Length: 135
Image (cartoon, helix red, strand yellow):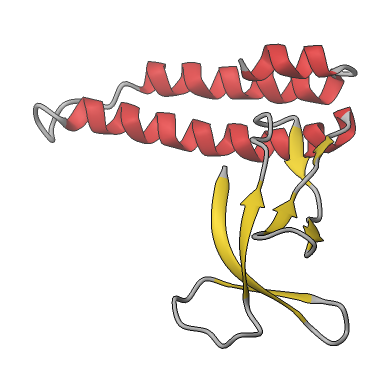
């Protein structure tokens, strides 16, 4: 993903990013070169700035997450998915008539799957094991 910015190198060697149209001459055009991280297994690192190019390039490296880092993040993601799936099950049950009984079996099935996935995450020791849970 490439995003256009304006940047300014400050006296303390820090960099300020900005996106407005009208700025003074201390601001230079810049482009952000951000590789697409692999969902749930990488993240972007702190950017580097190359002021020797025009436009200035802002480059992000990608850092692989460790198995333990992924294990810390995945439960939150699965909990959000579970809540969305339960909400969908409730909404589907109520589409025809608000008096339609709630499909508690479907919700119990979703909950059992979540509990199973959380246990699998806890016992996982490799990226492949974690990938099998979330795919």
